[in-house]
Image (cartoon, rainbow, N blue to C red; front, side, top):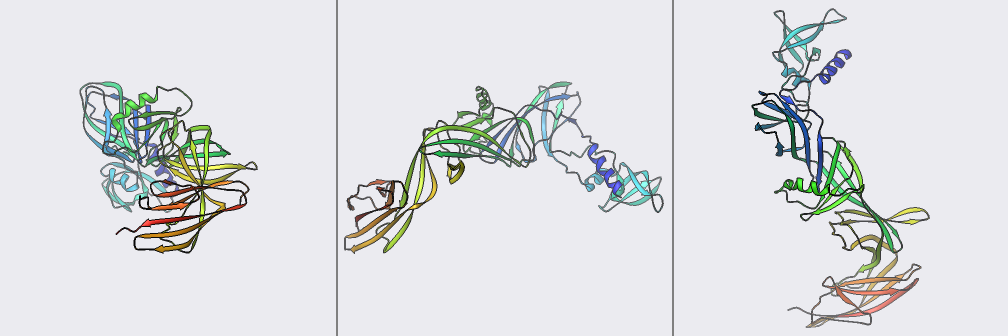
Amino acid sequence: MKNISLTFIALVFLSSHLAGVTLSPSTKDNSLIIYNSNIGLVHESRDLKLQKDDTQIIYEDVASSINTDSVNVSLPKGISLFSQQYRYDKLTQNKLLDAHIGKKVSVNVLKDAKDFKTIQATLLSNDGASCIVENTNKIIIVESKNIIFDSIPDELITKPSLVWNVTNKQDTKAGMSIDYLINQITWKSNYILNLDEDKADLVGWITINNRSGKAFKNTELHVLAGEINRARQARVNYQVMKSMARMEDSQAVQHQAHEGYHFYTIPFKVNLANNENTQIKFISQNAIDIKRKYTAHMSNPNYFSGEVKHDVTQEITIKGLELPLPKGIVRSYSKLKNTNILLGESNIQHTPKDTPVSLTLGKNFDIKVKETLTNRDRGSWYHDNDVAYSIKNSSDETKTVEILVPFTNNDSDEITSKEKYIFTQGNLVTFKIEVKAQSTKKFDVHYRSKIQK
């Protein structure tokens, strides 16, 4: 029985004949644009050869996640397309049996107690486990696994395909092209930032996740950064963006701003297997200026009591970016004794070039802040609160810490302190306090806020 199964499988996969004119599987001028919104735009060109009376074209090997509403096909003059179907018949034993009903098949039947012989018969019916066949005016019931097929029937299409029903009045040999949208293909950008004192080197990577149901071979690849309006699909801009991308010739990933989006062209042909992640380096900039910052968020003096301790968040701001950054994750590293140490991860949104980027690294181990409510007076018209702040720096370096206090910014409110402050982000009282190494800095603030009646 094992020999029968192997013969069955071999015949199924080695024999294939499809109805209509099947295009050559080889493509040319093929490209793929991947968007941020889980879609991709496929472009392919193939050679087409039709006889005068051919009425059907089978375009094989489209992605199984194809959006059939988006198909934009350009056929040679003289060929009129009037309907389209998406076909994909995953081969199963039952599908093969049903497709052979009324047709000749080979059947293995018992010759004696130990051996089989092969006979020719007509398949009459199939119920899954067994079949009824006719041989020399005899009706025989056989097990389904004993049926041998010589070919795959014309009506079964074993690869995801578009079937175009056409009218054609002449022999045609010409090129044709197709564009269509696919789902389940995504790209994202991730960045590595290597810190070295007040400078940093940035490297960006494109990661492509292909679950579209199609492998792309030797394909021109582009990615589009930006959030397109899916109602418009944005595919009418394809030829424009494609021509712009080709204007530049370099081994680096090329970038082109277009219609409020950012278009990246990979300068070499790529292979993207289905169900695979692929990474491509697309940004590199060295010796970027960085600024370190230490911040602590305090309580609103009107709404806390007693004593509260706060961690200090360490951040960096990078400036002088020569390229826009698509949204993604930035991982920051620094070197310690020839070993790279991960300092933190931050999400960034789509960022235009020459725009400072703030990245949060984490909580500083050596700096702590404490606030203590020392006096509260709730009068008929005003609330008066006295708060003592204490910043302890246990590191071996002087640090400047930003103390951020949420408080109303009205003309009737008052803030009194020996330390200078400004309002940031609208309602944050911001003190920049320098704290020497291995020391503690203390200061007091009086807050008066008018009661709103």
